[in-house]
Length: 167
Image 1: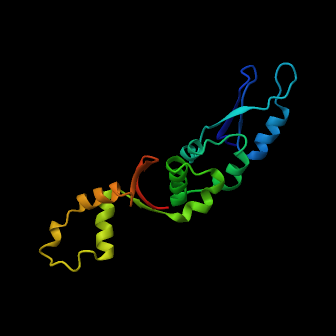
Image 2 (image 1 turned 180 degrees about the vertical axis):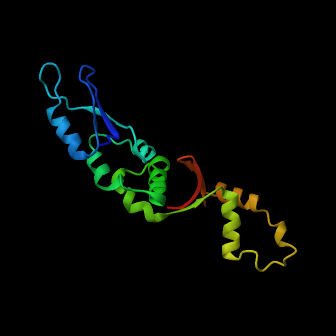
Image 3 (image 1 turned 90 degrees about the vertical axis):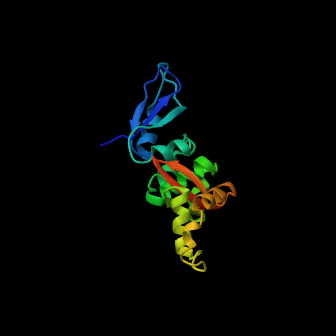
């Protein structure tokens, strides 16, 4: 059984413990005591192993939000995981509101200039121009204008570059 999380008590005299789910965490916290037999109530939570450390850290999961993490957020993957990291890290959206805001965002994997090339092609933006003039369209300048205008944003998440728009 893997234990991807670790709880470190703020009381340095008490050893920490690894746990894998919320029930495991609650069971271990219920019996955690210091040398005088007093209950230890405050711990720092760490994500040790798994697929979502960046989201766990971006959300700053703590004892108050751990149940919500396990109930709704931990299972996110794919585009929803990237969107959740973006919402938490870049827009400071609270954990309880993340799921409601996922559909507000759109993602493109790549840089802004690649996004603009695809956007121009998909929208047929240059279809009205003669073919000999289409190569003169400056996608780099258009991408820069979209970035500066706030229409899109380039972000690096989990070692990959994305263009995000929406909200």
